[in-house]
Amino acid sequence: MRLLLDAHVSGPRIAAALRGRGHDVRAADEERELDGWADEELLVLATEEERVMVTFDVKDFPDIARRWAEAARPHAGCAIVVGIDHGEFGAILRALDRLFEQRPDPGWWHDYTCFVSRGRS
Image (tube, rainbow, N blue to C red; front, side):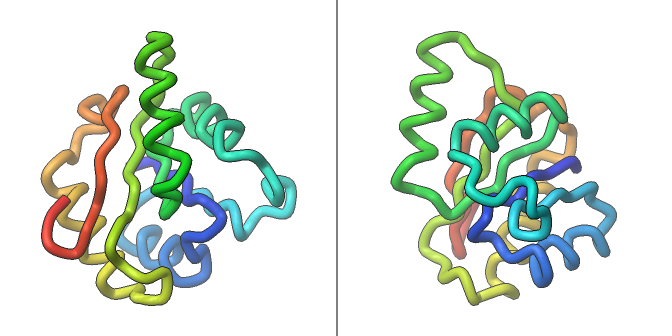
């Protein structure tokens, strides 16, 4: 899966582990040029590169995804992690693993937004 991790999703821990699982991952906190980018700019980048956006930003991304859907503006997918602390790397990885097992085809992510949690995704 091609992924873009938002700034609050640990590149050194989460991105590295996802890469080890065979995913193509960019992480905002690993790339200086992405420092300070607005949420919507990151989603534009993810869309241009056909990457699923992975974020903890439950405050902004549901609204962004809704606005994009209302405007018929496509994206490559958005996974919003909820109910898991940023430092619970194992729980985050297990939840993402479950999600990518359920939706292994990148085409299934087109315009798909979901909440990812400890118990289910």
